[in-house]
Length: 151
Image 1 (cartoon, one colour):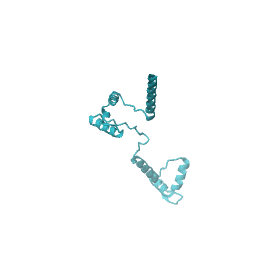
Image 2 (tube, one colour):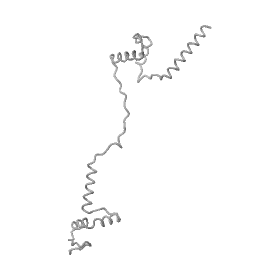
Image 3 (cartoon, rainbow, N blue to C red):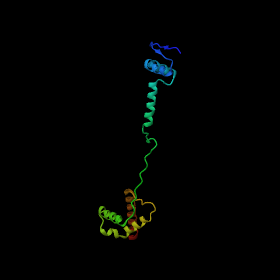
Image 4 (cartoon, rainbow, N blue to C red):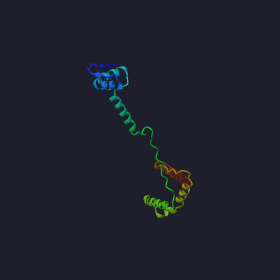
């Protein structure tokens, strides 16, 4: 095949690899414009090399699981019962509530502990507002009973 002359006045041998290198060296901007206009995949050796490097970089990049993972709700850590732990908490309660030492032996306290021990899952302690309303209702009921007894 006879040699080919390009607009840059270079003489080329009709070999595909030589033509690719020549196109990349002397006509890259024109080739890129043509490839973009014609929606053609870039095939010059430098473009191929940059495409391979981009693919290798993408493969080497650590993938993130952020989109796939979600925060799990924290489970409440339930401490196993032990006599030592119960005694320690009972003494702390005595100090915090300013109770006498005999409060631990009071029949009502023992009844509270007995009922709480029979609970299947957990014990719901009433809110202060609810406890206050119940105390006031009990007081009113006692006053009504006292009034009825005295009259």
